[in-house]
Amino acid sequence: MMIFSLRSIIYLIRRMYSPDDPNNPTATANQILTREQYRSLLWDNIIQVLQIFALPKECLHAALERRLANPYSDVDNMAVPIPPCKSMCDYCSGYYNKGLFSKVVHANVKRMLIDVFTGANSVLIPTIDDSFVKAIQKY
Image 1 (spheres, helix red, strand yellow):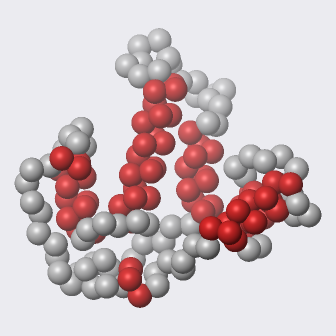
Image 2 (image 1 turned 180 degrees about the vertical axis):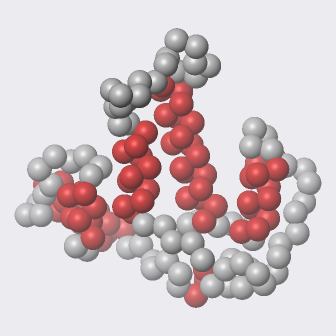
Image 3 (image 1 turned 90 degrees about the vertical axis):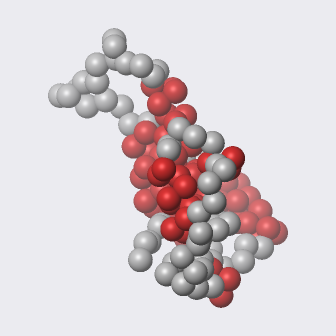
């Protein structure tokens, strides 16, 4: 069983942008990637994980096997077919189709975002932090 929460995703995003620890500075002279390139790579990884587990299009085992086989290959263009597990993951057992995630009503999402940023429940500093998460959790 895996549990994802908005708070854990926000923690990963905030950690990407946290400043260096003064007691343990990061050496930047001999790095292969710039800090911005590294952050971009981390963003891509977070999006890929969310796409695999929150919006699956195939068996979770096959998706993980495809992704972990060669992390530098284009996953969508892999020529090797990977058979689904047929009953061992939530996708194959049909659990995703039975309401694992509630349906998103776009009008309500728009209303919530307008309210969080400009309405009565507006967040003073619209950044990704605990007050933003708490404001979203009210809905």
